Image (cartoon, rainbow over all chains, first blue to last red; front, top):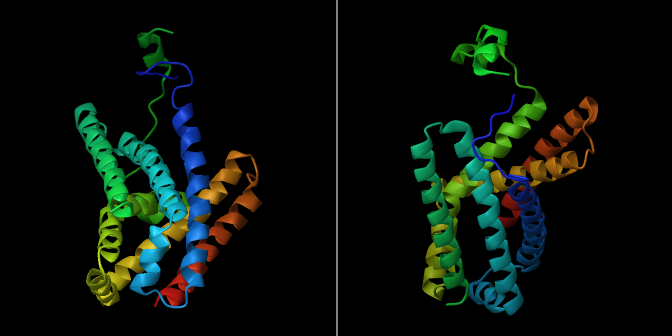
Length: 114
Length: 136
């Protein structure tokens, strides 16, 4: 027996799919980042700074962060749905998580384009 | 079916989920461990994100701040925490790839699911060791 409180067509499918697509984007970035980081013999400040001053690296890192934001939102929301049963507390925590994630994305832009 | 009818049909089954039973008696199979570790590592990475962003921020701020962060990352409690996070990332990465294949109905029979679980554990530990060796 299924009891749905929130009804609507394909409820949850978009988030489910988004979590998987963002996972693939982050996986590709991760492999690329490890290869780029390890291809430098010693990680000095000029090497590190020049790496993150390149346009493609900034855009790729921002794409990674945007993917992470959506991915983490779905994941954390799943955890809250499983363990926090009180609706009011869950909603409060969800809002807190959303605000935190939005702040992280803003901070990332600030870090990359300072 | 009305609510009353549902209640009479529903059986009262005994609950056997006290903490000692969960720890000592109910054995979580290996794919179950991969699953709960996937959740724990994900939660850990989300909580640690603020710290990692702070270190990225400082490392790109200036030459002096970069040296400070490099020194900071060499302190053993920081090193240990970063090592745990590297493992969490690797586990989440490999277990996640396994789930993508499971979503595509690949490797869902028991023998393959167990084998890929071992592969996830082994590759995440091996990659953690490799990255730790490369970074430090």
